[in-house]
Image (cartoon, rainbow, N blue to C red; front, side, top):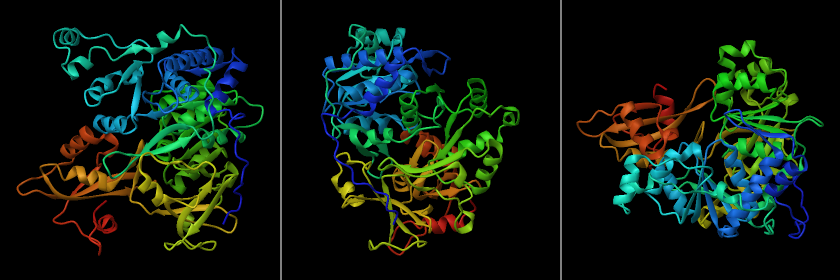
Length: 542
């Protein structure tokens, strides 16, 4: 057991300040400092950003957006996306990010399941909106900035066929809520937020057709802002080149609160990232391990000035010890890894000076539990295991999720007596360092999200060329995971990888598309009748 869990005095509602409110206060205190630089190189000052966000929050409240309301964001990596999330937060409503990479039908089911009242769309996702709106009814749809001009065809369809479904949706997405907000004063709305109020619902993969919604509260997220962030006295300069809807958004929140500046890229391009690090004197960079390897393999890295970097943060999936050692040589002793999950936020951190900490087989530790987090390793029957023994990782902290949205059954499976069963297998060494050994679940962690095999299998068997299938993850030499599918062909059919991948991408999104297809005569089964993914992984040429 790592006994650094702290029983804290309950937050007083009258004294509580939410994370979005904290961030905006920090920005307002130093209005002239550069705060956000867009992907197009436009810099927004802290004062400009805070004022626009306050006005947006006022406009949302005027439209009935407050406690109990869900606002879904169909947004990309834009300052408007950040501003909208903060505005919804100080208005008291719940925020749901509609992740890029999920198919439109899946997004439509999410929009419906979370009871979306308002959908906010930014310029990066205008193209996705018409198809989504053709599948789901949202009471209010608003754009974050001027919406796309209607095409001649769409305008004609709208005028002559006002109930033409998808044709109508392509004409006008919604009113520009930012323009409408200009009528308000730049001040916080008169809404009191408490620690037990809903902050948002984050989604992860699932087996029911709708990804699991993880409900978070203002109080649990607020605690992340009470710990130091970055070297004392230095202005953090964060490069956000991965999705703001994921961990890059959390780091952006912390950077802005601590007086720093966020440089936004639309997506991760290793050459552009390296150029920005040198040009903008970036201090902080977050990458998933496969993206870190892309940086290491880029020809420009040898000639790039990396001296401004103070932290290269990595995590989100397993990493290759050899490649991490290579990264330490290239970047210096500034790498830090984190182990966490949406259900628990941050669990453990491995600092720059701790990367010589290795376990069985040369495995790198994921770090020691952060202050306020308690970790125990349990056997299948729930008994706590001694140091060094491998078992299920269980976590207790004040930052755990409130539960899965509308799924008390799933919540009860993983949350018991204040402890979260992470679904991961690992062990603790004698100094309290945590190591991950395997996953209790079969989820495959890829760049962009999680793929659950049974969910993908349910889709694949609807393909006319596939009679049976099993999906499993395969790690390459660098420990990056890839989606593989073993399929038994339907009679007289010959499934091809390109055909199957296109089929999956159209229905579930590109992150679910298999990278390898294995045609087999039958799917091996475990004694209880489930597909034997371990045997497939061991016997197929992967």
